[in-house]
Image 1 (cartoon, one colour):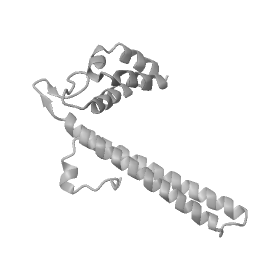
Image 2 (spheres, helix red, strand yellow; image 1 turned 180 degrees about the horizontal axis):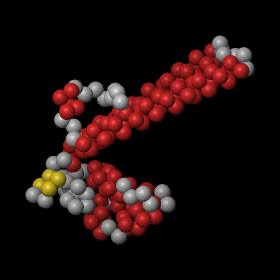
Image 3 (cartoon, helix red, strand yellow; image 1 turned 90 degrees about the horizontal axis):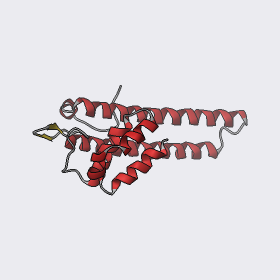
Length: 162
C-alpha cells in the first residue's frame, strides 16, 4: 500500500508506534475507497451519458469537477482527522507510575474535556454490540467524574447507535 494521505519522512515513519501505523493505514484505506468510489461514479455517469448520446456535453465535465472537489474535500477531512489522531495518540503514549495513559485503567488527568471525551468514546466504540456498549457506559462511574458535562453527550451518542 502506498501511503500518500500524509507526508512523512522515512525517519518520522519509522518512529510511529503500532497504533499510529494502524491509524495511518486505516486513513489511507479510507482515502483509497473514496477515490475508487469517485472513479466508479464518474464511469457510471459517462456510461449513462454515452447511452443517451450526450457524452460530449458540458454536464460530464461539470460533474467530473464536482466529484473531484468532493474527493479533495473528503481527503482533506480524512487527513486532518488522522493528524489529530496521531497528535492525540502522542499524548496517550505518555504515562505515569501506573504505566501509559489508557482509559479506564489509567486515565490522563491532563487532557482537555474534549480529548477526554474522545478517549472514552474510542474505548467504548471498540464494543461491537451497541446495547452492551450503552449498558457498560451507563454503569461506568469513572466516566461520570472523568467526563463531567460531556458524560450525557456521550451517553446520547452511544444511545443513538441502539
